[in-house]
Image: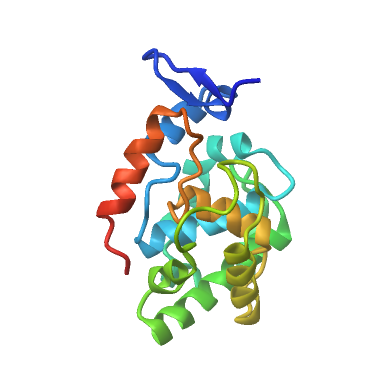
Length: 201
């Protein structure tokens, strides 16, 4: 089976981008492009935690609801959430109603703020774990890496929750720490150019 499919413009894309209508725009405009914005990094880590055991399509379809529920993933605001907020979110049908994952976002917001106070930004810490040189595995053949294991371990040590190595690797793929678009994908070169121009925090 080919690793690519033909997109609506006649150009090849990673096969997964055709699995659901929501995926094409996400694949072309977001997935793999490097991100240094702390709010977006926190959002993606949070959504990857919610995805655990579910499909990304479910999460992507509910992303705007998640943003509304969690104040656009402004972790400084989320740190003020109380148990009453958790109970309110457990009644919100627009998001994934999982107590452990909702509580993890609140906990992780507090850990994120502590990290920013210590290190200056979330991005500065996360980008330290960008793999050096060439990727060891071919695109979309791995679900973890040495770097995702190391970042997961560091975050857990600081008290973060729902940040296992597989979750962290999916986060790293999406946020551009690796270019995991397959070789024939028309977007791979766009991502590579963006990564070359990107100023690491």
